[in-house]
Length: 525
Image (spheres, rainbow, N blue to C red):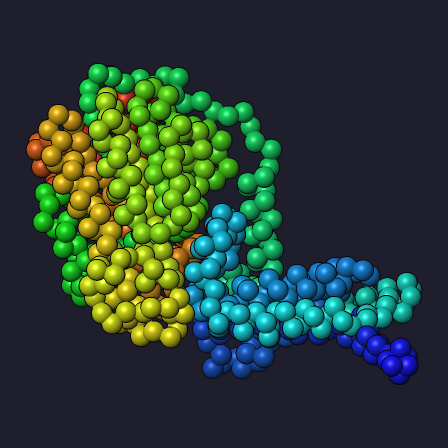
């Protein structure tokens, strides 16, 4: 017992500040294999083998210079842990899903709930984070950094900074003829610069979303219904992660995912594009009065739903999406949020409201749709039409055939819901009715090693921005005219004006050339 009293706790391992900075810098450089893969894949080294060696040395020198400046006494440990954990997580999602962690993705993450996070968790992620994130962080916490006094620390800091700058600019200066033109024409490489691009993106996100907001802009003051006594019902279905590439209403032949709607008298818009590559961008954008090129997430004004509610339209938002309505419905008086289970709950809730309908009505059904990577959780067992399936959220464990089949089952399930809604709309002879379906964005399913969505719009593959859209109108003349527009190039920019046009809203904000129900629809520029 006495021996236990005198048992000594082993002292914390000591490491000089210089070696600490060198170690963290080396860790970050080694973890940036995606960056070097991008760089090496776009430069020909045959005539310049020195360039092959120069790139990691230049990067190491720059990282070392930055860390030698910011790693101050008492800040070195928390900063290095933040750097290691953010690097670890960013590398995992870039390497396994091709996801770029930019300001839009950070916004998406912030608005993600616990259930959606659960769908992303798997053994591979946990092992990756434990060995390349948590264990290095624990090692840093356990060590004691020696700074050797103020003057000695300044000396080491100056020497390390100077060494890093000389290393970086020394190798850069002898390669300027190649590197300067390359980086000017390949700016996309910066998105793989981990964790610096992620820190820049985080600052950009906070600046956009938390800067002082101007006075809220009211847009409904000059809007009114031309015929407020009319009885109208627009059923707007906002899909999740559906891509046009897998729609059999289009050119997809692998699986008949649209067996239900292809039997209906509908129009499929086969050249329709999203406003963004994530729910956090696309949903606010599609209901905004600003087109994609002018839309900002920081805009502080009424959207089309606010305007409709303020002029007397009964607007109901039913939501089964993890990300909720992304702020679009926060001023609506009739909103119901479900738990992200099967989307049939939205259909059932919509049915309950039909007996009390009167006047003008807009029902928005925001689906969980095809949200990945746990595609197998998005449909009921009796809609497991296409097999074999990928019944896990670890897509790397599944074949391409299994991934495609599982994803197609989600589209098949959504198609059934749309078909049922069209049947209801067609039977309401005492109402002018329409059903409009459009996805929020698309999805990558392994093409070029990219999965899921959220790529920067300028870099996004077609699979993430080319989306399906379906329209039905119970007026035979209008429905026939819709079919004439099936090949038009359209986008989320058309939604707001199509909604205003359907309800006959007189407003200076309305653009008839963007209204799919009008006779004056034009293709998007």
